Length: 243
Length: 334
Image 1 (cartoon, chains in turn red, blue):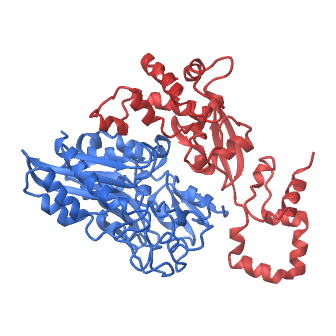
Image 2 (tube, each protein chain N blue to C red; image 1 turned 60 degrees about the horizontal axis):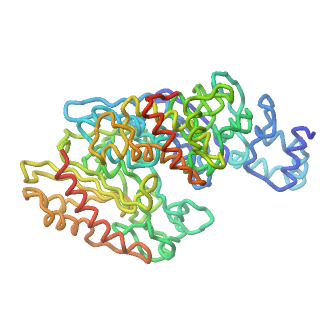
Image 3 (cartoon, rainbow over the protein chains, first blue to last red; image 1 turned 60 degrees about the vertical axis):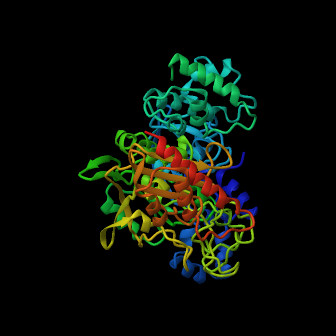
């Protein structure tokens, strides 16, 4: 198995100049800025040959600011467990979960907030973890699919999805279930949706199929398991159960 | 994504101070900014996280409500003061984005949304005056189905002024109809900007979306005394039923006396660089009975002077039909 520096050298050899997140390849406690990495990999020597004064001048003008990763210390609670770690400020909450903490239940679909596969709960509210910076989530409590239930003890939403065969390939399912879990709580406290206004309901609307579809619109299912997802949600809504 | 420093501040004073750093941007919900940073459309070198400075309440004032800039779209749409007195705002907010996005998106951030023009959002296209000032406009001769029909600058493909982008917000369309004000603070002090003047038309500087100055921070949005509580509607026409941007949207509020319209607030979304409001269209409704005929007259005035492109000519008729339908709904709703 290669060590961290070798991994990074491979990347440099492949010509990837920018955008690598050292956190993805190094344990959290190792801080390796691009400058240190360059020195370690011997590329700085090439820089000297090409004229270090010019590089220094460029750095002085702020050019380095566009290439040097900025690391930050964060503290975050995930599924009840506290984590303290260093992250590249560019790291999304989704990448933190998947790449740094091996919580691969949350899925990367579009990585642009359009598909909902990355949905997690932040302080109890459903959000797109791909559009949330890990550093901005510092101090928050995150619940992922891994924190909702276990194979031995499924949550009621997970059970309903199984019973109604509410998935095919399963890729969107963790996001669907996190989203559904929050959606039932939102509905229980009386939150409105576009469908509520369109159907003339301005207080505690009932979870009709139209309401369920609108409230779950932030989660796309490429297999088209929507009818069974709605069926699962319909049953849960009728039971009045959320978590 | 280029690297950036991160600075979490806990007061608006600290935010203003940190915001003066070169290349700094304020981070609210981040649902638009982070997305554009991933595509290198936005390249801030410093993010000032304003999520912990407060400004997250909705309060009743002597003549309306004040909405803190950090109030989330989902909280605003469900706030009792808003659902009870300004249903139009709740209705429009809930027509936008998805529940997950609304849980993060803020009131101030929604005002600051960038256009969803494909050519702006994709750096593979070299020409975009909004993203790269002076580079021209790829949309003019491109796939311009979602683009502007009103208020655009069209001096040809290569002109540094040309821009046919539209503003994507639903919330803002309602704010225009309601006559909201935007409170800002900045290095030169505080000021209040009518929302109608907050966003710009492209003019000769398409890179600039708003009149907000360097380092200025939105602190609140205020709404005047509610006039349209009983008669308002928001209609959004789009390619799918939910979770899509508007091709055309309409926010309408009517102040009624029996079947007579006392006053009207009317704005179009998806047709221009900012929500489109036409005082003459509102004036033609005032004092008249609420009929389809008068609504059709207002609709004609709303799209007066429209100029269309290869793929968006349908928007003129769609906008007119949507205006009439929205006003009919508003007149009926109670």
